[in-house]
Image (cartoon, rainbow over all chains, first blue to last red; front, side, top):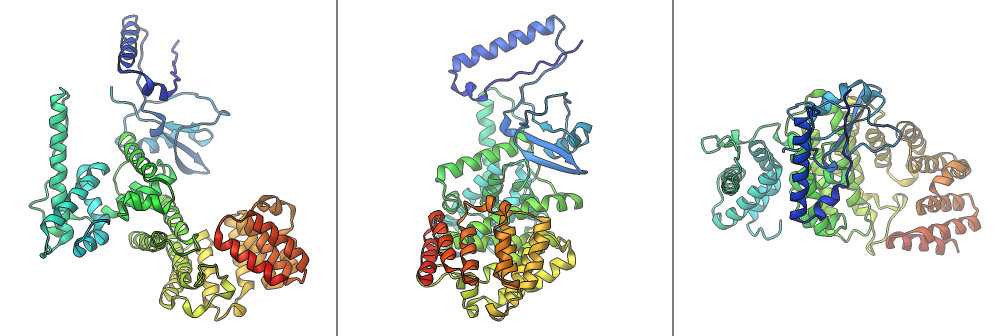
Length: 115
Length: 413
């Protein structure tokens, strides 16, 4: 079985941590990542850019709409994801609009943070 | 442009700022860097131009800003190298051997406008960024126009530029189908800029009159960039016709003058003529029932009436009916009811205003009660009219409109 582990955190907390705390925290992530690589559990993973960089794509009646900001509707739940390489946000959104789920749900497009 | 003593520099920047910014964004792929580089070039121009202005001031500014930008890039790289980070900065395409006319590309400005009005940016950031980068207003001027502290506006601009960079919003030429799709966002920005300028009736604040002028300049730019776009022509017509009435809208005391009481000889004739021609063009290009084109057509009916009494209210009422169909809103319904009252008598308009849904939606708006008061007065029901004006007065927030309502109440007594 494969599982997607989704990390929900309050983005603001990072900024309130001292440099030492941040270092400790990233260290723990590195240790954890290394451990699941060695145990052959890891299939892939990325850190995301903050929600302020998000764009939400929907297709309704054949028309593509792009809105700023993250997807935030409690009626719908995260159902899957694609990780794609695109030359810019417009291309990423154009690909997002082709996902069948965009026609009834929403696709949040968020850039991956360079590690 | 504060502190730009040199008039020719000020003019060169004002007239060419958008394409100067655009030419640099194309080379640096970075709005922030382009903007900083242009600021440095302006300072250099102030020091170096003196009595002699270069033959092509815009080209001079682009070349100088380019070198300033490259210097900045090199300093940043040096800084990163010291930190042990390997920087991958490609040198941007050079400018020294490029003939002046080739420094700019025709679609640069279009790309810049579409970058600033990208739907992935919050609407208020689109507006701020357009005014900063395309209109070349200072952050302080934009902040004053929107009544927010300068620091707030600066922060908004910084966030917008970070998002462009971090989310990879591109500086590219939209294809035909995208132009149609995205032009609405651009037009909403222009519409808002104009409304911010026009909604202030006191007419004392010059920055806000500047906003009207800026919106007219922007809409002309959009029309030039997308000459086949009917909605763009429609918005341009609407702004021209509305702005043509600016001088008649406020009296010597800064009080509001209603359309029907305005001295029509104060309307800007030339601008009205352009506006009327532009409405025709908008209808021809289509769609004729686009909200901007319909609003422009309504403004055109007013513009064609020699006096308030000659206004074809029946035509206005039909246009509002179409508008209510494509862009329904309580305010449109209110204006529709007023037009019906003017065309077919106050009773018919009042029955629409008093329909429970509309009343429910607009009960907290002074405009609704003021319009109702006016119709009640026209229907000869002065006691009810007084109550409506008093209700409007309890809701109004701006001084000129308060004085207007007080005057109306005195007239009833």
